[in-house]
Image (cartoon, rainbow, N blue to C red; front, top):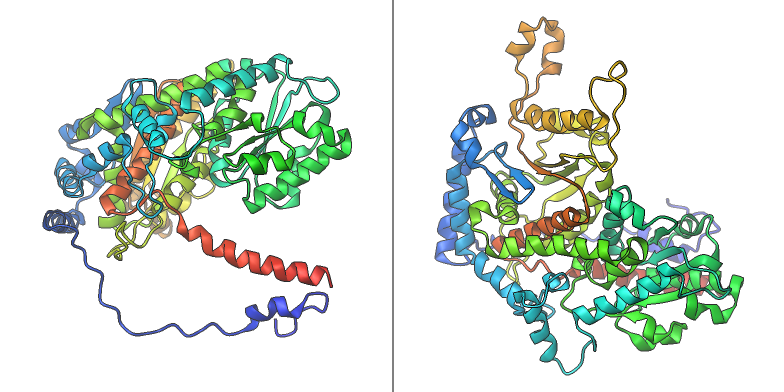
Length: 572
């Protein structure tokens, strides 16, 4: 507005009322595609193949039974069907050539070996070590990386897990008591970004799973992420400080939003129970022990992790394991870690045509780079997975939302599709209209053979169970997207001519379907690792660094300046 409201400081609004600077209009040379001659050749072949595929409809592709059978992969009870992608076995062969030219298998091996594959931060990438067992390659690599450092967390992965297990058991058994002698039955986990999205996804996924539900009886877990004070009110609503344990999750113990929320809950506890209660009611997941102790938390109650763990890949570290073990007990968490490890081993060893994360990653590259689709939907037909899409949104978009390669050269194409999603069937009543008759949005459907909470109504009320109804939609939607419905079919059904164009479904809209048997802790770990590794594969093919996130820094810097200006106004 030309005249800002009088109660606002005009100097704060001045930058918003100035005209934007004129952008330079000089034409820049197009960035070079070539990484190597082999990469250039493989890329150009895929471009030509994409052109040849333009006039081939999925109706034609799905009529080929041999193709459909070839475009499936399974690992244990985890099934992937990608026959509804706009691709053929030739497409996969060409994508495999591109992956070979990009040395994807070599880079995967380097990741598991603990080599420095995050060049801008000079770090290894070893989130697989968080769920490894002794003797696994990733575990040995993590030990080697830590041994080479002059300083680092004193405890290794298994020592930290053992410390968490012992602590969780003390709290859950009532041996660890609060200031007034009451057991701590409620946990509030304070963190943001990767310190929140991953743990919340796993928590929600297991809330109604029978084993986890039984283990969590009488306990509550809440998350506080947003610095908006409304989130504080929501997180603490109905809670008693006497029975609440707060877990502050911040590697450096300096994250602005997290530390403001931490101070807010510190005051909440102090006002109710006194200063001495802080040490009994607050613990930390951090590597900055001096800052933890200055806050009033006993340094012995800080659980560490490592610089080779990126925030969005940290749910299997103390970041997720501490709050989840407090809620569900360590055996459930160990099963979750084992599920992720199972996919790690599969990803590191399975041939491409059977490698589920590899296939998903290559399909993602095909859809984004060659078919030019800019979005991707993640559609779990399981309400328990309501927080899967928000977590994978961060894993994928923070990892691959880049415009330069690892060497700093400009990418000649856009990387990192826009990810979004919602559980079925809710999404069908929200954005599927666009998916069916608007923009083409490649989709990943995920369903479960068995429900965590089976319900069967009397036959005279419903002929199928609730889960049957859900899964009927799971199986129908990919076909509707692929086949569509023609004007000829509509006229044959007697649809009035004026309505025909409104009811035509063009089809030819790609999707993949994943099916698991039971959504238990092990399977939740598998699902997590599948999508983590899909992201890594895409980044390796594109030649970008999927493990830094410089794009989040500028806003933080500018926020500090605005914060200082606001503080000055507040002080008069």
